[in-house]
Amino acid sequence: MAASHITPSEGLRRRLVSEAERFVRLFGLWRNEVAEPEPFYTALAGEAAADLDRRHGLRGAEVLDLGCGPGYYTSALRDAGARVVGLDMDTDGWEGTSGLVHGDATALPFPASGFDGVFCSNLLEHVADTGGVLAEIERVLRPGGWVYLSWTNWYSPWGGHEMTPYQYLGPRHGPRLYEKRHGAPRKNRMGEGLFAVHIGSTLDLLSRREGLEVVSVVPRYWPWLGFITSVPGVREVATWNCLIRLRRKGDGTR
Image (tube, rainbow, N blue to C red; front, top):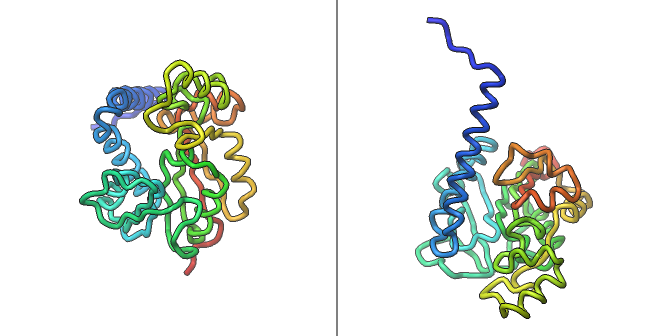
């Protein structure tokens, strides 16, 4: 029997259908994220771990989960075979998960060149010093190592978190008007637990880091529309959650 042949157009159609189904599934989980965070983050963690294992091979790799939260990603990366240290300033939900460290992402308590990979999901928008985080990532990463860096950029549909959609009024006026009308948010108050982090300015900071190389920039939830991240202005609104893959320059020999 002759092997079936899938045309390029049919292959593209199948991919788009698959990606659309994935988005619908994740969006359904995200809608209940506040009340039930575990299903949403467990799904994202499983996807990320499988992706990183395909790209880099996680078996035996030393990985830092930077901004690990309750440890969803730490657990998924360990299940894929990595040796993972998680770090966060917030220790809520750490019961029963070992290998988590309380610390500051801008002053990591780890030696230089200690990790094969750094996984950093949804941390940047909660830290005042983006440049400090990037500098520390570069410092603790071994030559040839990888970085998975994603965050909710400020002008995206969820950039204001609980204050959404007031972020579209700007990082000064939006939060001020929100609090005037609704009071302070339950968490992630602007200037305390939430900061305006933009794609363009983050890429500019990365361009100044001599040891880091940008591999790709895509919207995390719809990576097939990666071209929008090259369009200034549009990318700040249409991306929702920006994913930047990086590589530590060097040949990786030890």
